[in-house]
Length: 275
Length: 295
Image (cartoon, rainbow over all chains, first blue to last red; front, side, top):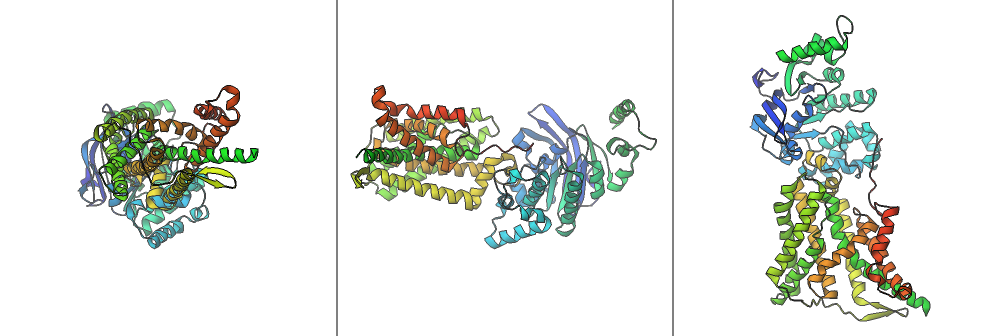
């Protein structure tokens, strides 16, 4: 399992066998490798605590702020090593993370939130207006709420605001962490539609961490399944979606009806041992 | 006559209050952007004023001394960010608070080491004669100080509300992590905030220095800013102003009208009692930002 087996020959982002340790003692990622091709949507799947968020933060280098450290491996973006860059430098190169839980600036208006996204760009006034219009084109809802304080908008609007803010930085790639968290299924669908739209029309690549495996696989081209800080399975979204194990453990579908939780656990433990 | 006297006390108090606001402003700026209560703000006021009078005593003309003092404060801000804050990123607020206490002693020591311990007179060239308006005697100096404070607040307001950096400052104040994630470099922002706070400290130091003389006691002026902050809220620039006005006015009025019954000397502690009472009713202050929680 290495970057050479990845879906494209020269991936936009290549994560090679990284290990992440928090607080010098807690080993969270134990050798994760993955690749995101230019223009791709890649899903990072797995249960709570599998290491999805840590992987994204290792790429965006937000780990430093949480006393995490990439101790082994390498991360390449467009063929250049980026693991030692500051988050600001990464944003300037085109990698922006949309964090889990939205993290809008609660006391700023929606429009001000969007404007902060262009901080690294140093745009002129008219360029800023164009950039705003571009975001409003994809998220008309945000235009209606542009003057509202972000803290008082709904979860879906905040998610849109967070993604819109990231787009303002003109990224080549967005690291999107749990966009479906806490949102109604309809809104989730709407947001994934926009993600797909951005992918197709703006050529933004996505690395997407999701617990909602079903939705994520429907919109992604390729997927990795993380368990306990390791990649245990990878494949095209289609292959993963039809894989019996994935169906059973992540989609809650099994070929011979539902298995009892007890069976699943022992089976799962064995699988992990083999992995 | 009685009424005129009342208004004279009131206006005097309001104008004195503005002087408190000036010091409180520095606290608010840093607290807003980094969540740190900067204990060293008083020391910065002292440092700025001492630097200015020393430059002047070296024979530098007023504008040059002012610019040099401003440059000094910016250097102090950059050094603080580099040496203290950067090492303490992601530490709990209490750690940062302790660090600013340490910074206080460093600044006080440094100021006296470089510029000496003498008490200096500070002459701004502002007349301090009372001005008679509608039968009330009002200090010209206080009026001008209030004007300067007003200008400063407007300038800060515009800066925070309408500029790219100002917006980034407010963003950082709201959510460090998110600010980092969209590429706002926290280090720059903190350096800028401390530099702005240094500038405010310089203005406060000049006005207070002209009042009290530039001496070590200037550091204690910061203590007067505390009740102002509690009243106005730690995160609000207008709050610092209104808080200062209320504290200044009520202090003077209490001294004049309540003082005689309790033997005087109220002015020194009345503000703290007021603040204490306020804490019970509205702990976030008059204009403090409400914590927005979605449930």
